[in-house]
Image 1 (cartoon, one colour):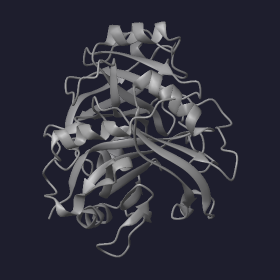
Image 2: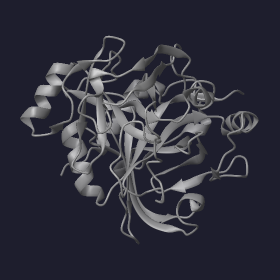
Image 3: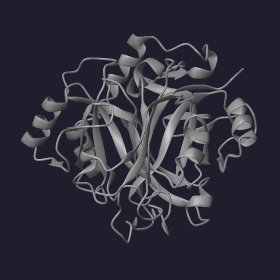
Image 4: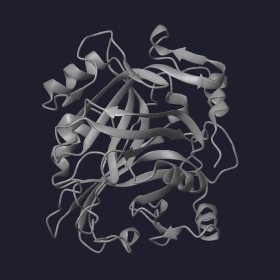
Length: 356
């Protein structure tokens, strides 16, 4: 069987306090459904956690209108570190999370009403689409992008994670991961200049080459109908050298720690990644047909690095709680890997809503 990429499952965000951050993301983005929450020890990320297991508190929160979620991640045994320099657009790694919205002006108005900091004005990107950037209280940047595919109407201005803006040193080399492995085969634009929609971002006045990637085919897999379409924008700064965003820091420290894709057939994916020069750097289940316990959920997770070291996570979900308090869990391994779960079943995840 070939690999199946269902979509962006989540973007990982290192924070100082899970509940404080989650409360803010619920207000700003409507991520009010808990898929899992777990306090345990991260034992398998040793290449990125200083060679030591680390205590952590993590939660996966989603928005049932559609899109990926947030894995909100907090160290419990050490104080998470921020960068010792101001991150600028074009620095290497995940610079911003893309968030899907229904109407760009209505979303802007919602943020102004709720005193959420807008970093840029509403401007057009090189494809003529209106976008703007905001900043959370923890200094993370998010780009708002209009989207047309929605899983459920809950009368919120936004859905979930729609992709990422990623700083790279050489776009041509990075396409080996984002285009060839992750399947973003449509080049929406490939242009080099200074850009009005970047005005207001730290370093946004520089000259950039930027490439916006989307996928032409609908994704398949258990959660594809809910995760929906997504996009990746690669940004290469031309008039200065980009610094690694996580330079001298650990995975799980403050900021965007990884971009995670929901997949099926990890074995086929692993073979492809190795053949293309991007071998798994972390593998939770080196033995076939085993599951890694993630508290309320179970599955198989792996990581690769893009050419500049940005972390891409893959998760093959084996068990997921639909309604934990009723003991309702779904075994994904017993289902057709290309077929989406029924919409009614996915909508039942709403039974796991949180309120603060």
